[in-house]
Amino acid sequence: MKLILCGDVVPTDISAPALERGDVRAAFGGMADEFASADAVVINLECALTDSDAAIRKCGPNLKGKPVCAQILRKAGITHAGLSNNHVCDFGVDGLHDTQRALEDAGITWFGAGENDRDSRKPLEFECGGVRVGVCAVCEHEYSYALRNLPGSNPFDPFITPGDVRALKSRCDLVVVMYHGGKEQCEYPSPRLRGACRSLAEAGADIVLTQHSHCIGCREEYAGAEIVYGEGNFSFVWHDENPQWHGGMALSVEIEDGKRTLRYIPVVTTDTGIEVASHDKAREMLDGFDTRSEIIRDEAACEREWRAFCETLREQYTSAAKALNSGDERGRQMFSHYLDCEAHLDVWHTLFETWHRTDNVK
Image (cartoon, rainbow, N blue to C red; front, side):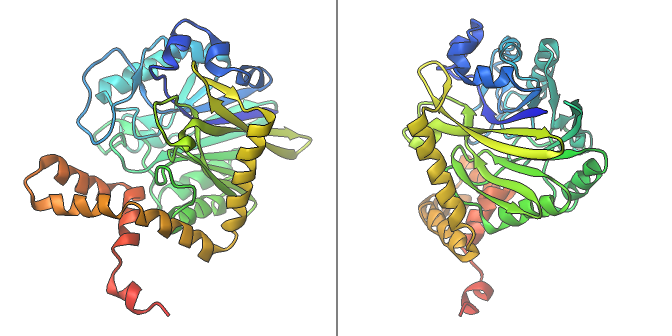
């Protein structure tokens, strides 16, 4: 059995032309060969596939691709698409339903979203080379998450999600959690994120992949599970000066005679999509991944890296607090957003500590 697990996929003005004309090789390069060798390929589709222009109000970009892109994703070999992220509802409930229909019409199974917060929790389950696979997709609380009376993505809940994973493990041989969260551009997990991922491993997940940070982070083995804190972008080719944005990894999982083998496949952006990284570039990317993974073996060192990153954001978060009483509606919304979304709240707690934390540090 061979399963390939990929990170964020978004048709952009750079990659959409190849997708829309059906040029798989231009869009995915050598990854097309990897897909062809797999029994199943799972991505996180981090956008709506819709012709709608009815963008929702939010802080940040509204992402979409044309519905025809689903056909090309399937042609490339992609079989399943997770919809639990902060952009799939960028064009409202209608945009979400358009996305689901486009994927269904293309023969791609979607999961990680539903008509309400309860419906959104239904996991993906399928047979793959004689192995029963279960995938649970969750997202942090950032715009697209489902509510009791609103369709959307499956919101992570520290009390509910581990139970969902435990139930899934009772039915499946291999359980994967795709967790869409963590602070963008941070190569290290916050203490809360690390605890959340470890709780999912303790609940029975065999693999926990965090996505959304748009950079390759680090990994650890915990309670018998592989935890990756930042898989990086897969196909999200963007005009961004940050070099981290332009690389990511897919994870190949092979099971033969009960033995599991994991292989990371580094990818880089091109002028038309992505390509498997060259030998030297792949070695550079994996060496950085390994170095950071060694650093987080020391939890104090990991927290120092996290705190150092948060300090680079202090002015941004201070400005949001100042805007709260300024009459600036967007500023007020930004402040509320920082309290709603777990990744932003992690930064907030780190930068603005209580006396209890500061006065008792020895």
